[in-house]
Image 1 (cartoon, helix red, strand yellow):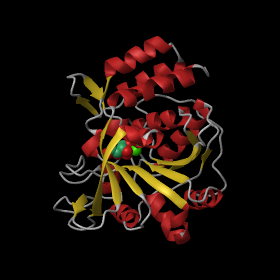
Image 2 (cartoon, rainbow, N blue to C red; image 1 turned 120 degrees about the horizontal axis):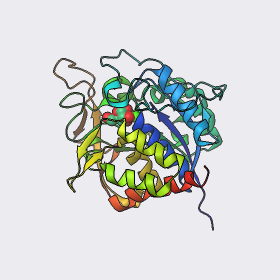
Image 3 (cartoon, protein in one colour; image 1 turned 90 degrees about the vertical axis):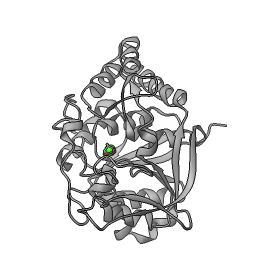
Image 4 (tube, rainbow, N blue to C red; image 1 turned 45 degrees about the vertical axis):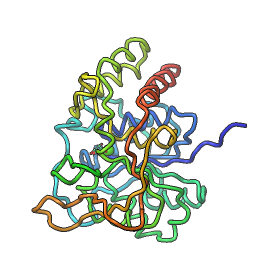
Length: 314
Ligand code: RIB
Ligand code: CA
């Protein structure tokens, strides 16, 4: 019997790693990508919204784009990550501007409508700051039991990337992250503690692009070359850290991930000491499944499958 597809909304601040994560999700036979809800984050919301519309059209994906937040719940203490993702957020890759229109509902109302349509099944993949998710909880508190789980890229049980303690997505809007972690909704966190171990080598991506000879394969290559979150991976290769793809990989096959149950609390004080936005593991009742490792063969294969899927379309 065909496994039922998982209804998914991706809340996102595209962003190069967001774009790759969105493609992996759209190409997966396990996921029914209902829509994207863009948010202010890597680059300004004007760009993240434009990128979401253009990506969905360029990929030929039948998914909604519901307009999200252009600001944060409280105030933004950081700058945009244009040095990592490029001025417009797509690493310098120019995606044809689409004439796709936003869904009539704003992000928080769209998520609520889809939660009512898929009660207890809807999975939110949150790969940007959590402002839209927090606004959804504020506007529609009765949504909580309708959401199966929120699988997020964010936080870290070790070190930060914006301050010694805080990871970017949580740092941009800690009050929003705090609201999500106190919501009682089942949470899965792909933090820097795992994403920094998952660099995809440039050689692997460029070989994939050459073998595919497809427009998407070429785009993969261009995107990673325009994205400066690069580490030397454990094989000693120059590798692109596609943080957001780990959240999608978990949804596709959680059994390929190692996890632990933790109580995670978001720090929303002491900005100057750098703990603003820290995701701190504390004693107490767990509120989050923390991803600690992922099967890298499985993860790399997702890229092969994605290029193959879209290559067959172009
Ligand atoms: O810290 C990495 C996260 O911040 C990723 O989601 C990246 O896209 C940026 O939003
Ligand atoms: Ca992101």
